[in-house]
Structure formats: C-alpha cells, structure tokens
Length: 198
Image (cartoon, rainbow, N blue to C red):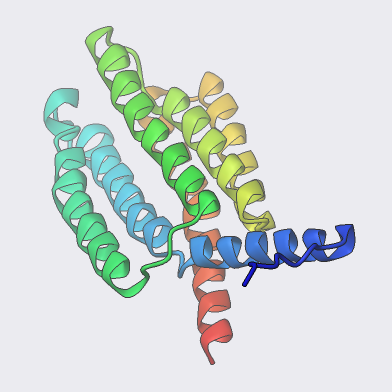
C-alpha cells in the first residue's frame, strides 16, 4: 500500500503557515510575567538608588548596591517561572526560540554595557535604556503587540533625555521609562492573557 501525500494548494499552504505563526505568537505572549517582574524590580531599584544617592548622600558605589538586590530577587523568580512554564507547555516553536534568543542577547549585552560604563565611570543608564528599547521593540514586533513597540519608544526618548539630566536624574528617567516600557505593556499582556483564558 503506497503512502499518499496530500498536495496542498497555495491558499491552504498559506493558511497553515499563518495558523502556525499565530499559535507560536500566542504561546510567546504568555501573561506578561517577565515585564511585570523586571519592571517592578527596576523601578524599585531606580527609586532606592536615587534616594540613597541624591537625598541620603551615600557614595555612588554604596547607593548602587541596591541593584544587586534586584538581581538576587529577579533571577531566581524568573528561572522558577520558566521552569514551571516549561513543565506545563511541552510545545516548542520557532517564534518562542527567536524571542528567547533576543532576550539572551540582551542579557549578554547588558552585562557588557554595565561592565564597560562602570569601569570607565560613565552612567550606564542611557546605554541600558537604548538597549532595552531595542529588545522591547523587537519583541513587540515579533508578537505583534503594539504597546511594547510604544514602550520601546519611551525607552529611547528617556535615553535621549539623559543628555540634559544629571546622573542622579538618569535614575528617575529610567524609572519613568520602565513604567511606560515594561509595566504598562506587562499589565496589558496580563489582561489579554486572562481574557483569553476566560
């Protein structure tokens, strides 16, 4: 008995491709967890660093130690979330893989920017905002979620605004940009996810 393969016409092929991409995009969207987690941690670290540096008068090296707290809380929380999600969702797809690679490249670039700017006594904030804007912009287009694209624009505007701000004020610009670039889209993703599951 011969195996007969069904020959698809171009319209059917395009429909299957479109449905596959839509399924992949839905699985990438998730609930906005990472945007909310890192958004709140970054905002809290910015405000704490600003307070300790500009108001309490701590030396910059001591005031910036609050960022270590963000990493200590954020990295394990993100890893646990991804581990649990991986156990629930067994399906891998190309869009999810690309999405992950964008954020992996972001993480590596972020570490390099921090290392290069801090060792040269330069505020890392404008460079971080530029890089975050890039990753958020790409992510927004990959999952076709316009609030992320606008969030990226907010990051870039804040990076440019740093030209006219003091180093301490960079932290406030970063906090505002993070609210607009991470938290607002994160809550919108979360709402969309809950609506889709109802």
